[in-house]
Picture (tube, rainbow, N blue to C red):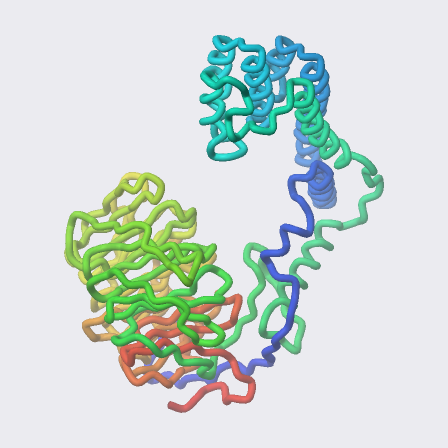
Length: 561
């Protein structure tokens, strides 16, 4: 690919034939209610469908291996049902030696929820018979390791209390105890319900499997994804990959809404979760605001930082937000209830100085934190500790992310370099020095094959992550100021970035031509993020506002600014 030259004529944006529709359809959160993927019948159906597909492709050996493993699993499930039947009978007869043998030696040894109920029954019977010493042994040997299976938070505490109580009914959790016989019958009913669930799932096995069943279901899934989009093409789209949900290529051409409320320039923005229902912004007024992306209404203001917000990101579920600030901290926010958002944790690295970047790894288990002290840190969200550091940049680190595989950290720095770090060892495995100015951002494509970098040399550059070769350069915008102007991808075919001239620039990824300039901001545009679910672009600006942009078919494709 050739680099974009100022002397080359700009081609107009491609003519789009998309129309925007508001429609109601089956929402993604409801999909799990359609069927239970843990139902044994459904599991066997999936195996049969996959085996059929393998057979049509000629992978006969693979199909045979699949069926062999499925038969082993089926045998294990049959043993499980047999053991539950025997266990139910032994409990009703009070044969506790047999009960213990079935629980410890058979397929039930890993079914903790069943074991807890069984040993709780045995313990209560020992208490009822005043066999305190045996009850104490059962409590420590069997019930204590299964404490997490208790039906309420105080149940295990009450089990312990029974060792000194006058009767079982004295413990609040067991005030309705009505004797050994009745309790055994209730436990037997519980085991019977397990049997019925397992057996019903195996009845009425279909004997005929329609041809090409997997392909048919995939076509239906893609058709649903297309129908669920807000934008619809007049021509039938062609889907070339099943790795991600279908999203149409739409070039925003009009301002949708302006988000007003910040009392300082807006440095960064991100969508809250994958759905795009909410969008968040970080500002020099030391606050983060969460907005309704459709109405531009401010739903929450997160306060606590004592300096400007440089960067924010969200988990895919949209329940947690992460913010990096000039006060030298990263704050973790619980935003499940937007009426009462809470800062649950403050992370303060040892180096001091501004934190310019915060991002999540693909598993969302770790945070990548970088900033003024030239160090990149990996923070474990579970343990609450820094578990790795990456050092080697000569100046502060403006941005750091992980690649989609999660094995590399990629960073851009004021020292004009892009560095690649091994996640496990912390060592720098490659350094790129091609930009002629400070690197202000790095971003990877969804496929993980491409890297996009932004620099204060008035260019954004595209790299092949496999060969680490520079593919092309995007120009036309302005990026020389003290602040970070960042760029990112719009799907697989477009690149978007901010500019000091107050416009949002959109480039065709392959040709490097500018296909759209969005004007409306009255100051520097620092950041712009795309949401494929909503087909909306959001931009953050020095004019104290956040703006959203969408495709309006009544507007000319290339707007004159």
